[in-house]
Image (cartoon, rainbow, N blue to C red; front, top):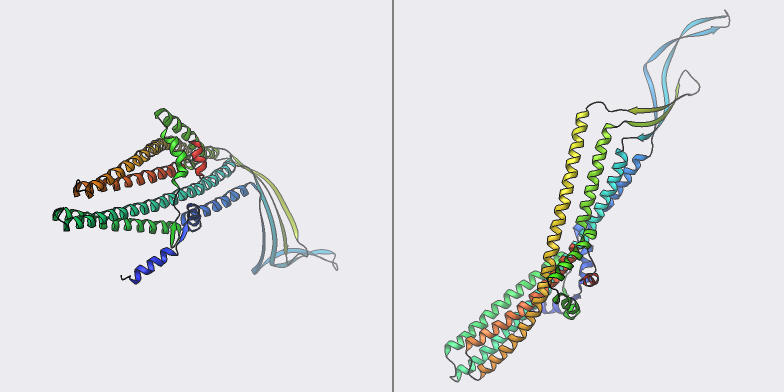
Length: 449
């Protein structure tokens, strides 16, 4: 039997592939994902913005130095005492340059609350950035888990398709033997051959889906040449048992419990509350435009020209107040616009609550339904297996036809497909519900059920 070089390389790559678990894949994604890193940088930027806003409460100080040369020189009239005559006489002197140093310090005392509310807004904005970073983390972890589950699901579908092809080949070989002995017609043999050919196409399609799922997962996590660790289905037995006992009243009760948790922990809801808080402070800042501003300042200057031997000093302390007069209408418009933004944030918060309620309610129903489907599909697989092998025995005795055998085989394979889909759909729904709850630990989620 010939084995191509490409086949050998593929076998070598699979043999040397590292087995990766979900936690390792999530860690790799966090290290290499651009969105996660961008969110982290946004937090650092917002922290600096808060510090910058805080600096507005401290005094500002400036120190200046200057040296001027007069061209042409400034002639000044003065008087000089003449000792010979004992009288003052008029003289002309030239001022050639001027050197000065000045220092000024200013402290804002009251600004209508604008600086204070601006500082509080920067704190809220920083918290929004932190929540955004947390949301990006949770979202990425959920996306990796979904991709992880998708790869495992496609792998199982691939294995099931190969099993189907193997059964088809066995049936075709058995049909060929019967045809040679005259027990079945050429039509029955061709039916088995057709089923085998269809199975080969199904295997190729399943292999393509599996490869594409791995490529997508590699792009998400940055992993190369890997095989994913299988999930132990027994580890979810307790969760499945709980969900299978849910009735309508329990589902409604659990939905309210999840909602209460989400209202406290969901990052979108947290940020909607912070946005509303920012808009409330913006309204107060707009009102501050109608109030006076008060500041205290002190300035001093040291001056010396070519006509003096020493620096002369002069200083001033000033308390100033500014009252806005015009344009008052612009300030009124600014206030009204701030009130509109506040109203919009209140409406968006209520809208978001309704949306999250709907999503959580849908997820809880889906999770319950999928767990019950998992149980029913498991029974369906057992029934389909019993039916197939019963038909297979009758076929060997010449009692069942090729159509009956292929129908039984397809029913078995479809039952296994349904069972696999039900299991992974349940886990994907669980992952999405954890994302809505802003929950990282699966153990905490299972305890909440």
